[in-house]
Image 1 (cartoon, rainbow, N blue to C red):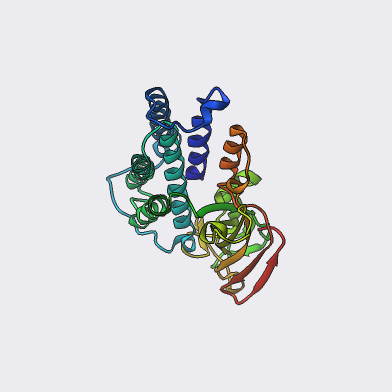
Image 2: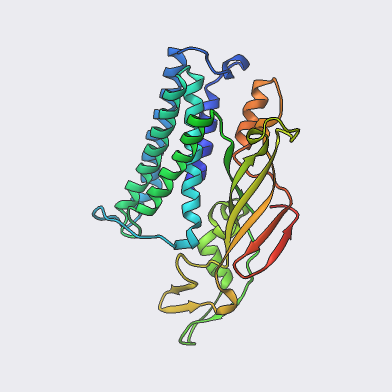
Length: 320
């Protein structure tokens, strides 16, 4: 949740400093005023994020010595896809900020790599002092993979032909009555889901890994420029997971009672394929509208998709 909100803060705070329509156009040469503006905004976001997160979140946690934590396999690796996506988007956003200030292509790519890595490494370092978690090398690999996905495309193709995107459709979890493993206590699955994911739509959309999907959206026209394929129509493949009510297993403790779900709630993986709308491929001249399209392009456009999951099911979704 923190990482998705960070993407919005980076984007919206950068836009807030632009006062005129022409100011949204990238500079064709180095502009010291723009560079100072974007540097100040970026530094402010970084400091504000670091201090704010510590005060609002980490200060309340049980802190100790810096240590490592192996969370590979947790949430069927959906959190790793989140790291990959977030680092990618941070790289793209910071690259665009550098280009707006008139930096060269290579320097702008380097800015995207360094700032994306800095933001993510700061969060991981804070995790490293939490006794509940720790510094995750798996998360860092995902972070580096995200910035690399951005940087390699921008360096070799000069564009993002494969965009990483995010979508969330929070599922309705069953209000299942549960007995503890010793049969002495009772609870419901609703109690568990509210504790994990919250009870509001926005909170669940950000926290419930069961409803999240991460996509690679391929711009077909950029790979085959001589075809009549529409510039705005992409083909996307995505991944998700279901029946996850704990990090590593569907087993949890409330007080002295232990609860565990049966085999009918086995965790499983989902894979998707379907069309996607690439808003950057729509030809508009208004720079405000272009910027708005760029913001909303971080999300997978709701569209029909086919799901194939590890349970052996093939499911058609009208919107995914």
